[in-house]
Image (tube, one colour):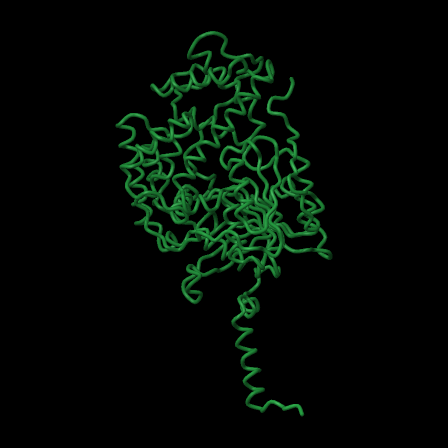
Length: 513
């Protein structure tokens, strides 16, 4: 004979079910998360798009405590009746503001994707319009310190001044940036992103992240593996190495730039007359670099040029294969001016040799160095580096023995982390959680800042990933209809490229005249 449970037993069962439902991560929380309030953007550069702000906890371990604001911009799906959800996109950095990506949406995904998805760019916490951190009261204060820092400090005096200025920069951040400074880690950005995912009504995340944005994607995938719908990470970091072995990671980053530059020289010499520097271009550049290491050169075409200028120009050129012909011309002009002989093969005016300011970020606000401040705030939180500045000249010597062009600048690139506040709030793994859907990992073979090895490692470290290789140049994938096609099939239907798929680049490094 069946025994009916007592009323007390049944009440206990109901209570247990209620308690269990409250304990399921996100089960009750999803109902409590308010929606994003969208309205027409008022900023001229975002005219025609929707804008919104969203409050998230400053410290996600204290959800009832102080909050910070995330700023977003949206390009609504063209076919709202058949909308599949929202694509969140991040441009990298760290320190890159993402709202403006809505203007570039048509260059990131194809029309059929924009028809079915809202496309949302967001400024991560502390960046852009999201309660931006500010280490100094004015641009002039930041610039005074940045002017004292050499990207490639060589002499004892240059090294001493660079170390001192970096120390002072960090001390300025400690004094002025406020409580957000120690809550800028990627761990928090990924948790913010999950709040935003809920706030737009998506049950699982659709995301595209470039460069540092791949770290956000990998962190999200391991914090919320069951909430992955489609994640594309393009131009990848090695998440374990970046989080747990940052000095080795920086050494290998320098090597990535060297690999890309070596590829540039090979393609230049193959191109012959279509490359102005052709004819043992590697040796010509090495001779030029060594001359600039001895001191500045006054160029009739470009004015005073330093080793910092040369290194920064060449490294930034490796980001975009479309810049290669002009880069070769600039180098040939300098070579001719320094060593004599024909300075150029051109029949047109000399191309510019951009000398970018130190990461001002293009802000129109009174203070323009938030991107620079945030770069340190995120990297110093995520990836601990040695805390004794006196060690860094020795690192630079080791780095440049292996990577002559870029090793020294990479070794000194984050020396400001030596006296950064200690931040415990970071994610360092595990990286192998099996996600609900497979993550698509995309990487060019000659990516300078996120070398191909990193993409291979990302795909292996993640618990459920597929690597798509672009045989080509530049930082993150570009000029490839093949890659764009896989973006589309994956975002719309979850279709993955077969294992081992390789795509070509549609723009050659040195097109025929």
